[in-house]
Length: 253
Image (tube, rainbow, N blue to C red; front, top):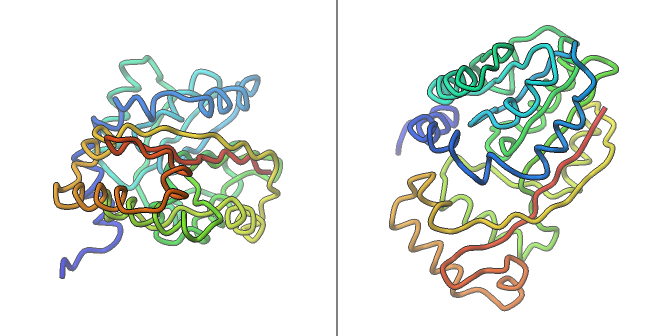
């Protein structure tokens, strides 16, 4: 037994990999980032919260268009890397705060925008975190949540959750679009436009970025080579293990 909390597991996983996530090409680009920029453009007086900011790419994208961005994350090492990168980019309006998403240290209705990108599948209590996000968002504010989503079919869902957990033991769950909509409504949001995209993940960089133990890498590759043709086709599994999955961007008010 490790004796670790989920929070310490997350920080142990991501802290030593902070620089890799800041430099990650997968995280640093994408049409979803352009969508974020388009959302905040024209709101120069806005205050933005980036929940589970990770390598800070959502924060870097919106910072040139708004008054202030608060990059919020559980990992002190990740926040230090974000601070360093923001300084290098001349983003003086980006500040960092450390903490968990289930208990945000911010006043009610204190942000014009709340964002989260590729973070929610690590949250210990996803629904509580969504309620906290709604609490700190102004009544007329807007939010956007971007994350990998689980397929609706159990056959595909089981495969996806299995390889995610083998790669990263801090993984909690990838939720389906239907689960997302239901949870957002329960948290007090009004779901708006939902955009689905496909994301190709090159296998070697995917596991190296997380420093996945070799025994787990072999287990993932074993699973990939022993699945049905339906699973192979859905995830577009390639000979070297590279695969493709679904990513959702959902806007909320």
